[in-house]
Image (cartoon, rainbow, N blue to C red):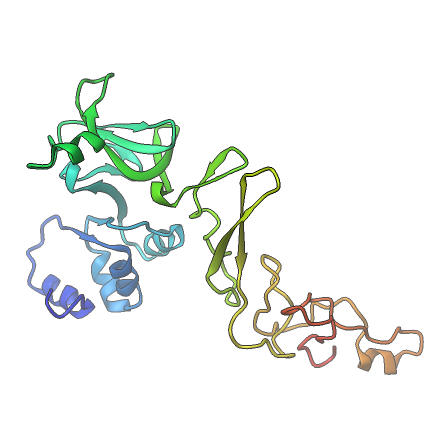
Length: 273
């Protein structure tokens, strides 16, 4: 659409659509936009199938769509395979998935193109023949693995890191701990080791704004602070309790964890702590 994707257009289109089986396809960002609109979500739920592809789809987004009654199915493919040929990780009947020694994903079958017109060198670099089936095969730039016959794409070849003799896809480490609003986008760095190799390290950078003393206890998954809880989760006696009971120990700093290297003097947000 010239003006971009609008959920209102989806609702309007269904208003005059005949009562037949209906299917559509969306990219993950469009699906997220629809789910933010209750009316559009209800409309999308009337489709018999919604294909989601064009980019990696977060499992949380798929769960959210299914919980809303949307019949989503992930699709995997590209122009060289005439579009999607793997659905929910399972290839079509005449399509075969190959995983190379370096984890590269290969797709073979009748939907695979012969090559790039007038570009023989480029064609030879990514197309060959599957020795098992004799079908034309295209080697993608994706890295994946097969688990019980289901394809799981884990990253891109041009983003692989060799560390400790293993090839690691940074996409694994870039997945933000779910449910922690205090986490910023993780960053990655490489360090040369004394043995001449390289070691990869990932870290989650803190938010730009400094956490306040009323930000609540630390998040258990990544040691960032979350909004104040309804009750204190701190196990140390509060000043109020210490005044009420002579035998109670004086309050210590809340053990919620260090914040940006500061000492443990941050107290719990609860009034009694």
